[in-house]
Image 1 (cartoon, rainbow, N blue to C red):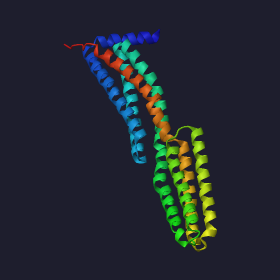
Image 2: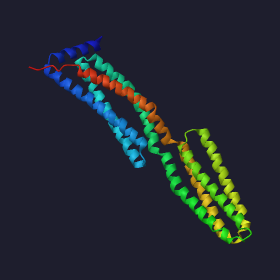
Image 3: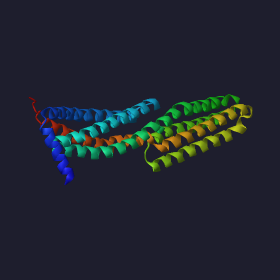
Image 4: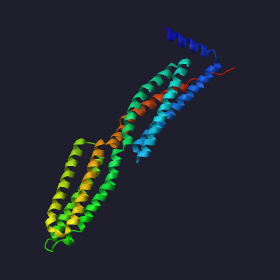
Length: 284
């Protein structure tokens, strides 16, 4: 009973002072408008963090999203007592609805941003385009030197084995790209088995080449070194790809987070409409 009396007394006091009422009305509209602006900025920055193509850009956008969300909270905390003092019941209901939806949005946004700044799929892709590509290039370069070292009678066999080994290395690289984009664990496991099989076949081809090119020991050593490097890089790629942070953050941004954003914006629109319906009290 006492809180109701206090609110009523505050409302009565406010209504008896037209200047204070007008000031509160203007400030309420300003805060309501700023909440919408800051929330839009936060949501847009979160999207940029998810879509960013560098760690630095993603981190900067995530920090911007958090900063705008904090301003939203400050504005909400300032607006709430104003609406109570003005006695704007429907406006308070809209604000309370926004606060409820925004709390859910904030929690999910934190999860999305945390995933986005890890950029594990992006890092895996970079490794595939750089270190893995270099390993494949070194592997093929070493293999290309072997046929001329073979006896003429063995040369067709050496060429076939070298081509097979090179194709196995390329298979690993091709599957990497699919693995990085995949979100299903079972599908990723199947791809990992395929890459392991290609690695095994490439090593078998190198073993078969050894007796056919006795003068190619150094080249075969280089080929084995390159293949080992490819396997090491591929293991890193698979580990990063399994984290799937870019894929997961994008799925959240386009799904649940987008839906919560729509609910928050609907509540803010209702608040804006309600605030706009109040006439300014003229002062004398």
